Image 1 (spheres, helix red, strand yellow):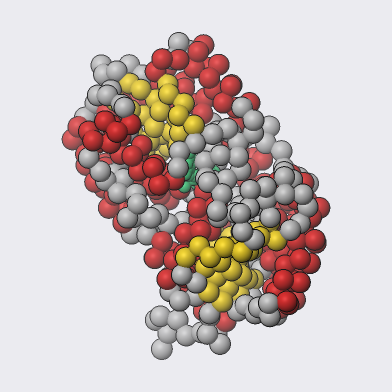
Image 2 (cartoon, helix red, strand yellow):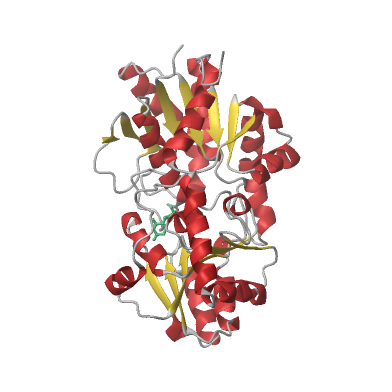
Length: 407
Ligand code: UDP
């Protein structure tokens, strides 16, 4: 059988939602870009997501061979925390739509634990393989930072799906090992396929012109990009700025909106005030994904202070723009960043150590430039076309299609 059609299930992460606000982030970008790159390989991808508050069209074609289909389950405004109860309804509505339209798929690929429940049921009903990408895992999240609470059902569903899925996609060896250690997953069913980056969007640009466009001057710029939520560890960025002992004046630019009201944003702003850094930190809010290359290029260093990142797309986007990254040595970040070559990985959440690494980079034009060049070079091997080819191979193996390298 040849692999032609895949159903993507992404219950709460609609690929049309703007990333960097609410619950919309790396997973939304991943689903959209992977689907587009598979579409370019002539696969037909239908992305099933839940109907949410601002849906313009129930069915939307977003590129060659790729459609987004909104399925009604629960109130459009429902919070992600309430969605477990609506899974059977989502599955029922999806199946009704599929039967009405006489849609068949060769493979089901689900994203995140909630969708993985739907993916398992759907793939079993259709008798086709189930591929799952968890994006984050509940047990790792809870172990990463005190205070992280996840629904009791989450680790149960994750373990059940790991046991029944035909293939599990992990972003890094760290994630694969955690699946085996914490959930008893069979590691031979896990394939390592990293996230990708849009290399034509995220590319090096002239720093002076982008700074002029953004109204930034000649100060050294530290950049943070991402949703503002406790797991992102922004307090460490503020403390790092407070520790800096640079000859040069330093500005911190924070891009992204609060994931939950303004609670975390207010906490970070309060800390900045306590450290007397109010005038040195700009909170610019959510920025359109297509505008982000301006920020990465304006920055001297991108800082990723997270407690946990299953992958860390922001680090890869920054590298693709030729901007070195100083990041916590957690999850997928250690597979993206080459310590000492494309930036620095810090094993301890210690502001002095982060400040020291940032200073090393900003105090040496030579080091900043060579790290930036190495970063871009590393990112060049991680375009979405490469990622899609790897995922296509996974589908092909499961459906009995000959894959490259077969005799
Ligand atoms: N992002 C964006 N605009 C913003 C902030 C973030 O487009 O204002 C995007 C960013 O480019 C990246 C994603 O949101 O692609 C965040 O992904 P990451 O894997 O770093 O974090 P996650 O959101 O998955 O925790």
